[in-house]
Length: 66
Image: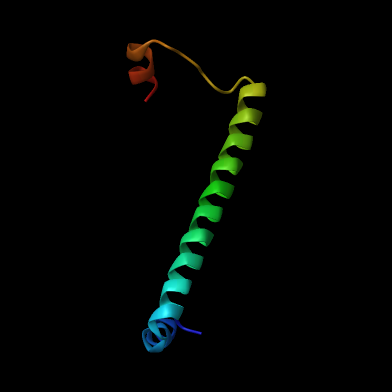
């Protein structure tokens, strides 16, 4: 199904169903973002254990790292 068709179908839904759809989409987006954050966390852990990450509390050094 094409995105444009989905949009048109959503427009035809009753108000209550649109609200439900909005809530579901927000929930799905939050779940996806959490999964992405977790994936990045795991990747960072591996890099840290492999000694590939540089850590510093010095603001000037952090600026140079960027």
